[in-house]
Length: 283
Image 1 (tube, one colour):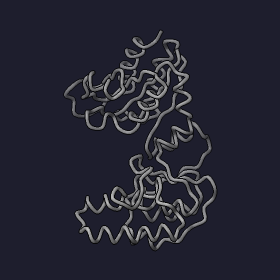
Image 2 (cartoon, helix red, strand yellow):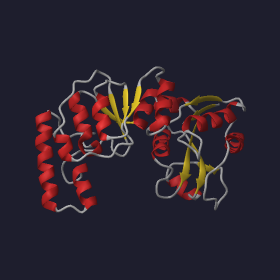
Image 3 (tube, one colour):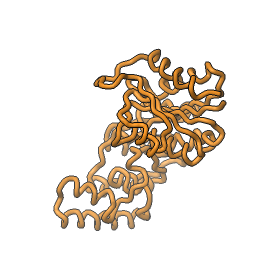
Image 4 (cartoon, helix red, strand yellow):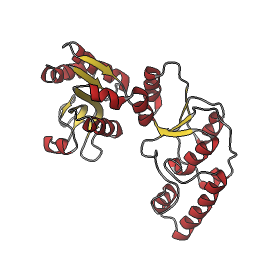
């Protein structure tokens, strides 16, 4: 049997540690296991990159100013997932920096693929969220459209990432992508899932609203495209079996018992749950 294990963090266990623990449970039963931990950003993303591209350079920025300073250093990946979106005025003052080929600005998953202008653009959404006057929002939209024209950037996917920071990075010659998308491509997850018999993913909390977050959503999508069953191991699970199947998830197994508010368990406890899962999903 072939199993693909690709987890986000679970409780206090990082994505790599959680993935390795679950993978070991399946390997103990003789399964062939591919382990591909995923994370949107932070240490989890850096660790994922080292698995599919050992030696690749990953820098992390904590502020808009750090993004401006570090992008020029031409890192392989510049993690901006912890950076707040700058104002349009700040962006308009930025010079275009020539960066080396192969540089990627890593943005939150929800930001990747966003446009900047228009009714559904990130500037308009920020204006609505902040309760800005319509005239002010329209003025910003017009200024942003003129700025994109000067940069030579069409307002397509990812130009609106972090309210225009993506457009500036594209103008500098960098790519813009989410950490999850970078890892999915780096691991070649669609190909791995197509060769697997089972896809196992994991998350901190599996609830009705977020369905486990972006990592679970991406693995569920990949598993569905490959026509492979997807099983989730979660710190806590609040989703019924019927709702799980509607979301494309075959089963979900929780480490913490119902009603527990804090997720504080050990790798051994996660391993116990993973072994129970493996006992019913190996043949």
